[in-house]
Image (tube, rainbow, N blue to C red):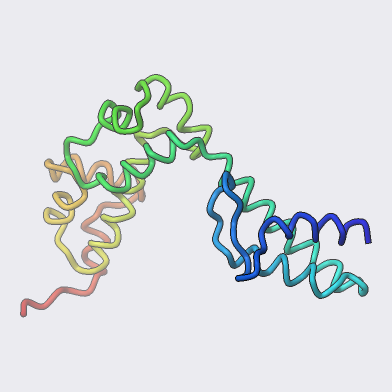
Length: 181
């Protein structure tokens, strides 16, 4: 019952007469996790199964809040800038750092702690993810290279092979071909 009372008092902070909402200062985690946790606590924890469901829902909610809160806002700005500009061939770490209002050194130190990889590898990952999709949709290797920010097809092919372990041409041969309209 102590757990239920604590959970109810925590959940009170997320509920108003219109339903679940988030507190100011908490990261936006969406209302689904809040509704699920509140529903689990509200149904009661009399049976072991209900206890497990309530604790599981609360754990999920807390995990989402913690993971959303851990990302430094400036690093989120850097990651968003990369996601919005991965296709720009002039994208480099200096531009990412300027967009996030941090030094390049701080970006290179802090970004891996937040995202588990360097900003340069993050850029490459985004480019390769989109390149793979374009090639699988039947776009040619040259066209794909340009669309994901490579001005040099050979540099793109080397990066693709280093990332995936095979050439973009291998994936292109397996992709369905686009019929001109």
